[in-house]
Amino acid sequence: MEKRVYFKGWFLPALLITPQLLITAIFFFYPAGTAIWWSLFNPDPFGLSTKFVGFANFDFLFSDPYYKESFYTTAIFSSLVTLFSMGIALYLAVLADRLIKGAGIYQTLLIWPYAVAPAIAGILWMFLFDTRTGLISWYLGLLGYDWNHLLNHNEAMGLVVAVSTWSRVSYNFLFFLAGLQAIPSTIIEAAAIDGARFWRRFWTIVFPLLSPTTFFLVVMNVVYAFFDTFGVIHTITKGGPGQSTTILVYKVYSDGFVGLDLGSSAAQSVILLIIVGFLTILQFKFVEKRVHY
Amino acid sequence: MSGMVEKRGISYWLTHVGLSSGVLVLFFPLWLAFVASTVTNQEVIHPPMPLWPGDQFFVNYGRALIEGDSGQTSASVARMLLNTVTVAIGIAVGKIVISFTSAFAIVYFRFPARKFFFWLIFLTLMLPVEVRILPTYEVVASFGMLNTYSGLIFPLIASATATFLFRQFFMTVPDEIVEAARIDGARPMRFFIDILIPISRTNIAALFLIMFIYGWNQFLWPLLMTTDPSMNTIIMGVEQMIGGQDDVTPWPVVMAASMMAMLPPIIVVVSMQKLFIRGLTDSDK
Image 1: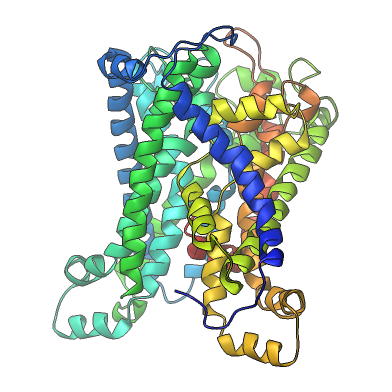
Image 2 (image 1 turned 180 degrees about the horizontal axis):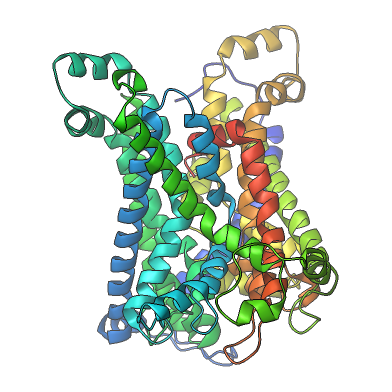
């Protein structure tokens, strides 16, 4: 797409574009380039010596059982978060869409968690599940269940999935509700006249019409689960117990800043970069498609 | 889809029950955080904690605002709120200014390497700051920008989501408007100030909201960047107030601080809901 009408000159536009170019060059391209560069080296943390190692960092990662485990953890974690947060959001959106009056009030009451930082969400829930003083873990104890997400791998994973879901439902709800309200009511009414009941109408007509929204949300939720949940994991489990909640981005952080293994951390960044790049391309393919609808 | 198809009946009430349970689950931790911020630490650490607010509201909020965690690891909440407001507004304004001007240049001019610049900026859509965090830290450190507002702001505005959004919006502006402006002899910057900014103001406002929340809720970057407690932002600062496993965490004060960390963005989102939803569904971010 191009504008037919435009202004002449090159100095003014160059001037206008310079601030963004400078900032992206310094704080984006240079660091991203450095990450790629570092991934081919084995620098020591004090920068005293650097040795070129080619793809050895990557070779090491792909044979490292901890890294494989982190991949596996990330796959489980992001699938569960995406599935639950989208499923619950779709359910709530379908219910809200059925109301003639009051959908707006529910919308207000359901969207506010979007404004809560994942790290704060982590703190709120960690407080309730605290192994010594938490309200929920105390009641679970009364029921004879000894909750301890600091020792039990599954409980740790369950808790970070639940909290990440809690803080993501609002976002998905907004998009699903907007998607549902965009479906022409005549289509639904025609199906109703033909005798299709609510859930049959939902699965045969509504859900397929929602598929662009659903697809978009899958990509956005996977990206969310990959990166934005850092705050949830850092406040609740710090990647533990063991490595059981160390997702890829948490490993980049802990290997780089805590372990000071710059080469490996950079190589992990490059792998993440490729994954996100792939997801972005997927999303843009989809956005182009949506324009034709 | 419309509600018209369904009649009132059991399903009507089930709809309300379903939605209300969703609302309750979302509010549950918020309510208990509020309760915990109004009672004494003794009441919190001897479970079960109360379910109804106590009388320590002013004590806990006052302590959090003025003392923080008594200077052990974090600054006072008042100081952290000031830092966070500065950073969030800096990110929102900075991003809007650089994106608006560069989108204007890309859409309304023809200059050499315009396509190249566009793709360069577009590439940045792909990478969150988390991926390039270590090298970015090095860059910021080498500029001596650790523990500064600019160090907190600049790396977070180095992406092109907003440029992309403004470009898309400019493409929908009818060419006749530019044509008319040119016939009237308006120079580019006249057009920019008198026409483009006024017709973009809803988009600018919506984007401001989204970026403000984004900036307010940053966690990892300020956590790495601010070794000096007086530069802490509220989100990472609250996390710092929680002691290690064997320390005694002053829960009521931490929860008061959490409430103050959450409420400003919640109020912004809820009170400007329409604009916010519009911005969100437009920017797809």
